[in-house]
Length: 539
Image (cartoon, rainbow, N blue to C red):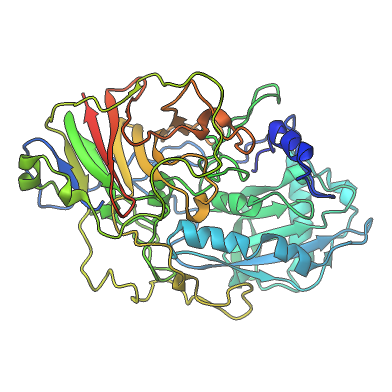
């Protein structure tokens, strides 16, 4: 379910004349219902294991709704490791004549939604829309379904039952992986805050196929930015990362701010966390470095948004049903550890364009600078830490021209895919993207480099983003929380959904002590290619 637009953003947009006529902005008082790089180099002595094993950093998937566990995949959800076909069914009502056309509403969401996932997955995944060409009328007035954000289960079931009944004669549901029921946005009974994914304990059945979840779309025209991409994320078992204030007032973005689409579709940096890309199968095993034991480990992390040029759609780093963290090997180099260099951890050509620091135009707060636990390089002594990562694929497997394992890049009737999505280059991107420090059986600290490119093209600050993951925490209750390296300052007040976290990343030359954990992160260097050299000290 999407979250409301912050009132501060609405006020800023109105003052600057940026709110378009007819655009709808949600009230912050709306209620919520949960419906349910490269190589790692240790600076200390150690030995490398030669047998594959499940990553010790892949948290166990729990019974929490949309658990952030990585060790196994919830087979009741489709895993987006191949192109998926989505049908868009447009529903009108007898109490309202539509003022928009299906083609206009399709253009509200595509190709923007497909492009978001193509970039987030490094060209490995896309949603192929198949919009119906005409309105299909529901049997009852829009007001009869009592559509609202906190939707009564009986009214919701009646809506879905009627929608499937009128659509089934015209739509072969057996052909599609994702179902979008798009309501006439101007019907009097349609509540735009009710857009959500409905998970069904008892699936609907049509054309020999069980339909276990449906995206019900009630957005105004034009809709919220990236709202359909957010909802589609739930179809792949991703949780809501925003925080709902108990009284409906106040900030919704205190957990992750701008830093993931599942937190806010309005964010400046909406690319999915590296943790989510690992879960979804978009990172290859060697791209996740698992930091174990105590001591100091040096890594080179390339920007999260940098992807392999020309990677084919469907060529994901994990099979559709397997765990994302299987088959990892210890890859620590004793020679590198001995001389204390990070050379083995650097990748030529990795990283996004642009240098260190915030992009031009980013505005800082007038509050005092400085951060708890943030300082310049502290000269931490080398220890005996270990970093684990998966085996590198053979050169043939890494070829940019290698075909994907999924369906073809285009299919009959698909809209908005003029060329194979994987043909677009998103960067180099074969290096280490994510570092993970386990802190308990269901918790970990994750680190990734966030720059200003791809889905993060409007980012406020660049650097190493640090966040805490808990696999036992429910969707909407903070399963991921960004850790602020600059808690006394804010940034990009005019545009950020939550300015206190807009400057959360650790910048070049800084070190950051993770609150409540024996983990210190120091950003030592920035390579010519844009990758970041990071020293992680534990214990």
